[in-house]
Length: 132
Image 1 (spheres, one colour):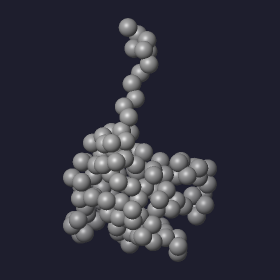
Image 2 (spheres, one colour; image 1 turned 90 degrees about the horizontal axis):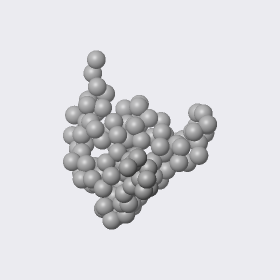
Image 3 (cartoon, helix red, strand yellow; image 1 turned 90 degrees about the vertical axis):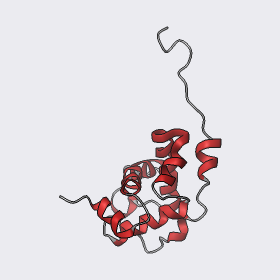
């Protein structure tokens, strides 16, 4: 069976299959952050800015301060690239869009370095939690 993300990445040529997969995986974070986890159908729809917020949270959890580096290795250099990936998935029938959705919703979403490197705060266990 063919990997649809790999096929789409090969056809487009700009982004790695991991970028498509990561976007798909991060949608649940976006839905939860937007407070729509109990919604169904079009009520569950998240905006471009909500998608970016979910992706930022998921990237910090997954990659920490290396998230910007990982994304760049996938061909993603700014938030508008994520919009392009979303619309490639829409065109491929893998995501649905609302009439008011636009790729412009992803423009100037957030600065990767600022969010992942400069804004990174490591969470360490409180003293005494390690059992020592």
